[in-house]
Image (cartoon, rainbow, N blue to C red; front, side, top):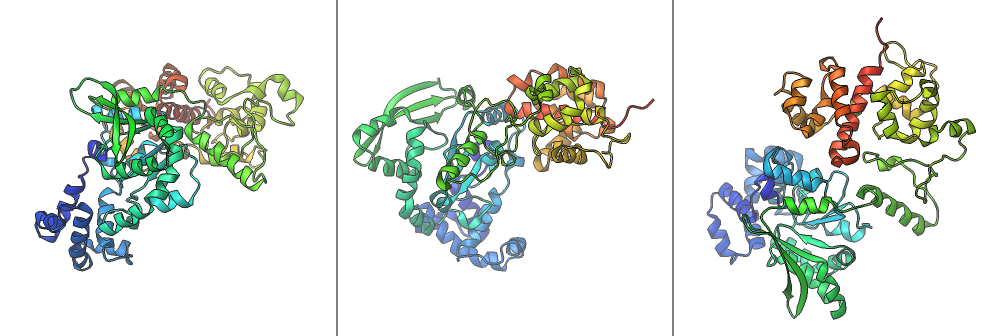
Length: 505
């Protein structure tokens, strides 16, 4: 994904030109002295920029934040990182480019290899694990699922940036090891190149290193694995076979020409996966650790895995489709409560489908399973119905409820509210609408779902909210993952509003 496309960030030449202007010397002079070699241009600019960085008041805050740069050229890396540190506010909020990002967000992607410094990919794929630089990729154990490989470093760690001639020399020295690490990824999965030219040195080096360790027969196996996507506005979408020449080796590839990326991302979103990527990654990680140590490090727990489940909260059991908790009482099993899932509770909150006589057992036996600590699930209807709440909505001092349920009651709507950039975006959207009804009528569905959990309780007409949630029940099964998660949060928000405090006479 090219950040230039979505956040209008500068290309490499434009970035270096900005720093040449800061120094007060023409960029063309540096380019001429470096014979047009951009890493050398960066090195020359970095040498001249160093004194300005140390002496100018304009960079006082950077010096305070990074008081001990590692090298002479670190000041340039620090300021480059500052430019790319948080570009999410600059990402499109509507229009065709936003549609592309939303389609990419739900695409079935196993992993991403990028040379970008910025954090846009972490914004689009918040559940992915990020590896920064060659060291992390070489000396850790990636699992090839739900991972981002930032091989040229990240803006969150300025010293990790591959920017200067010395950085590229070091990168090239270790490139064969990097290629060996990535080889299994290339062999196991199709690789789609977006935003990179076939003449890009980084692409050519990696493909060359991989080709050098493969036999002719194995090279043919890459024919369906390497796909170069060429963005050409107004062009007719086409897919063709071709060859990628790397030295004395010819690698078979496919070339796709597209007028935009939306179609590509939508096709990827239609691929089927049995488990969400982050769940599959967690399962791989736990199985790998079990095999490596021969000692299980966690207790066995049976739990349904929802789209917003915090995987770190769940221990792993090998076995798919296990429904019944070990040691469950005959009474609970006989009543069928053990088969309840979170969707059943969501349905009950909106439609009152369950027997209130079961609420006590739901609190004690079902909620800990379907709603572990960091998974959103309604609790107040069942706490209220089981008699565990005071009129003001607090747990009675002697309430005998599981720890995870007690925590949810104590935290209330806090975990449902969006933070940081998303909170700011929700506030901007909310300010444009007079009330919840106007928000539902005029705003996009995605924006409405984002805003609702951040509303003040006194500003919400709960009947309007319930009707909205019932109307969009299908999001739970058919909506985008992000919309489905937000819808669940909205139902939990409604549960808080409708059931936390006792009804007035």
